[in-house]
Image 1 (cartoon, rainbow, N blue to C red):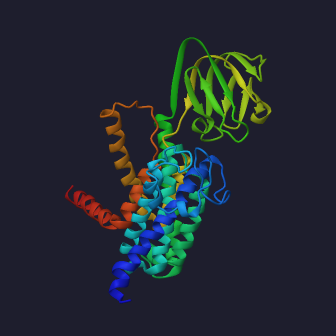
Image 2 (image 1 turned 90 degrees about the vertical axis):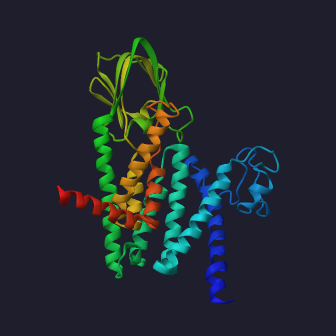
Length: 379
């Protein structure tokens, strides 16, 4: 096997094939992790509709979906195009990262970038579906990024292992801290939703799906999940409460004496632990709901990106994600007439910003800084 054939054909094909296989596994992660399922049990993939486990010969990445025309072989229910898309996207990313990184980072760097890309893709599609980025990806990915920074300092533009590791630690801190400040500023500027009703309406806080299901909050015609309302323990849901019941029993309280915090209920200043009440209900005339500009998962996600790529990449990623997110958000509101209150996941834009840095970011970043410094010099 000649070196030309090896590097121009065989290894790129292998990178694409490995990416497709990893993409198949990422589909398992994307489906199971946010639903609280193990990625190991059952060991084989299964149809989401009929739950039939798929044999190996019908689980060939990319090929099987096309061969079965996007339908289950047993129940013939449609299999979402997303499964094919994740496999194809991962395969293309692995091929592009091999081409881009083999000369610059060698094999160790390419493997680290493959791990990074897999984490970004999994986080993106989970965020699209559930508006969350699990800790297993963000925290686990941050640890993996720090290890990669020490093991492959070239990822950070360094030649010495400890310098690379220091850049990774700094990048994680900057990514986390800078986006955390943005979250706090967003909280101060856009941190409340006000509801008012002319006549009292029903409200309810319950967990109908059992202990593992999310706590649901219903305020008249408006519905929220607990995690979307209470970002911190000291966040509070203020209600103009006219009638209050705990587990169906009437509760006496003074006017304005009932409120809900992230870690407890309060009645006339008396703290009541959440796990002692299964259902809170009653009637209200107003509600002030805390909300976030973005979730804390995005903050931890930025720590992961900074750990892999360094502090300059973290700042670039936030800047690029903000610009792209603003443009997409405006087009959705103005062109497609979507409501301004509809939430938009920010994780996919952070992923795009991170990929932009990997392939072109340093050049764009220094070009932008040059323009900025030139403008300051002229001023």
